[in-house]
Image (cartoon, rainbow, N blue to C red; front, side):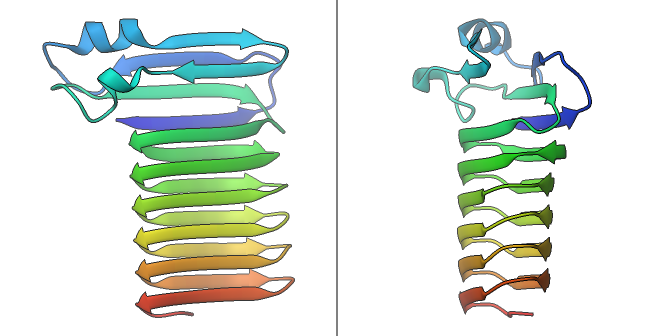
Length: 171
């Protein structure tokens, strides 16, 4: 499955949930997802009994939110892609790549197995991956990135940088 977040110049938040492929449980998977919105907070929860890993079909989630929104993602197995301007990003996956275009505030990413690509961070950046490459183009705050097995590439950092990998190159 996948999770796509688009922070755009809009006042409307939309959610689209679709099966990522054919499968006998795709209708059941989508019907089990709970979507709530209250007090400016959108919450999308899939019961653990039917996670993105189980069944023959995965789920693709697409969220369009106003630019400047904060984003918190928790997923067992899904690629997470964020475009547009987010105020904050806090993403954790067991398996899956995580990408983000622009985050003006705090950026914290953890994945056990997946690559992390970050374009523009306006504040502190903290990234952990057990197995995966980390690429950061530009950061305005402190940078702390760790990979047990993967390459690390940091373009420009305006503050301190701590980058370490047990098995990989650091640039």
